[in-house]
Length: 322
Ligand code: ATP
Image 1: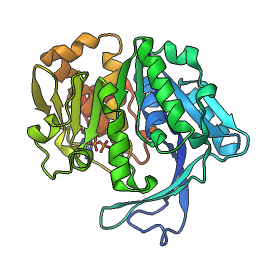
Image 2: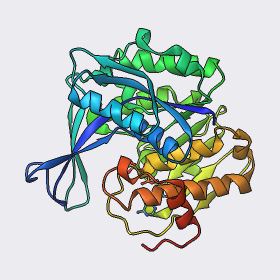
Image 3: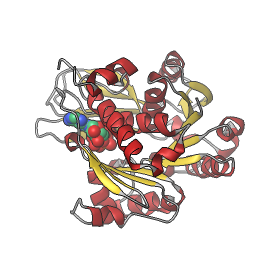
Image 4: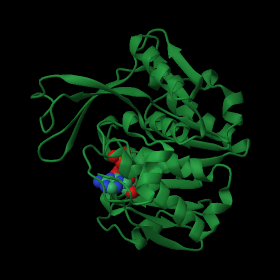
């Protein structure tokens, strides 16, 4: 299998032991390793693909734990650096009773923000068939420059560039800055996945329709995806567009659904990018990706909930017991 290199942050989410409370009310927290780019890499290997994660962790117990999770899951950590001084990033996250997610980040600065262009494992990046990234690594220097260099090196070596902005507004100095920076690298990506909320945020328009999605189109783009939670996803290419329904499952925690969806998509197209130009084959792949996203919502946390191939088959064949 061709290598998918995923670039960005890996961190530990601390989530309340009970649901529906505010961060202040939570009686205790459990560790939930995550970070969208790391989740995507693990989603790929869990399905049987080949992936590496590139980023920086603290040289502390949490950083070593996260590197261990990558390796246990068969993700190459050859592109992982450790910072001697800064800590591994932490985030406290709760789903409040009103359904809103509340985040509190500990990044002052955290190790992931301190990755420098010189620290990049360029040989690893050059060997990528697909190079995937988000936008959190664009927020501050020196990580921002490392991100831009990694993208450039991957592209020059012929990798397909895949972008999931994964908006985390509280991390940015302002909404305008977030929009500007997220869009500053827009035209380089050949595959882009946004959620419905990100579509609204980026277009500054409440409509979630074809016209609004197509306003994000650019000449270099091969595939634009808008994910819609339990309503599935919409897809756009140069030649066709359409929708794929979600699978019905018993949802307990949606964390990581989008990452699972992206990992599945990249796993399916990495060795056969012509799929993007063939609507019936692309639709099959997006059904697979939607099934993966759905499965990820049936269990707490992101990484433990990423599916194996047999779990995906069960959902695709409609024999899920849930
Ligand atoms: P997140 O940021 O929570 O990781 P996202 O907002 O990027 O996710 P979603 O739209 O929530 O992405 O999920 C991606 C895909 O996963 C959807 O297109 C859908 O196919 C599937 N999915 C998500 N939530 C559900 C659900 N409740 N039931 C069934 N399928 C779901």
